Image (cartoon, rainbow, N blue to C red; front, side, top):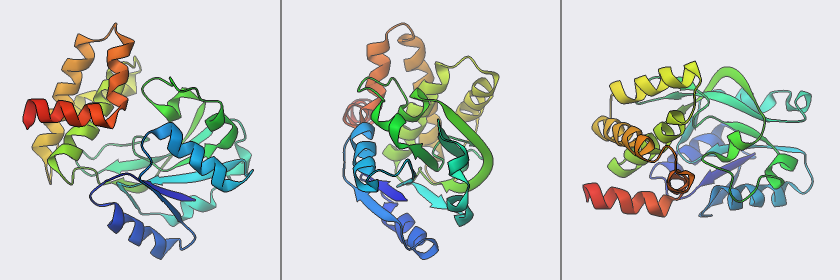
Length: 217
């Protein structure tokens, strides 16, 4: 089981909490790019078919998730629900995931807007963590902007409902930046809905930092 972080302001606190619940957690820090990070996990598991990933902005609330019988799902990533601490949504976004090593290795460089969703996924509708992402104005804006762009490219009923929530309600720390990121994400997705190259830029954290500074610096 890996805890992966890359500059999240609350990563140290979340990792400390995790190790109190699950001392065997291994931290991987500072690898830019989701694909490179997941490949590093595969290297470290040394042939294991599956591995859990907890991200830096995740606060684990149910350690029993790591006892889930993942061997019963051999052909997909397994996604668990997380509670969004800004808008109270509970779905797979920012959730703990059990990754399939073979699917990770077979995911191409140009995986689209979401590394995990590029492959087959199985969702377990059980909330096992909290997504505490709005710890700074930029991190709040970035997470909302990226997720709303992804949701805007989906035609599912659930995605439409989640999208409405992202743009209509946020509470707590940096709530205004969550709403700003969500609303700007919708505008960007609409502007570039037919341009995959422009949409793909939202995967790049450096590009997101530059955009935030350009419009809000």
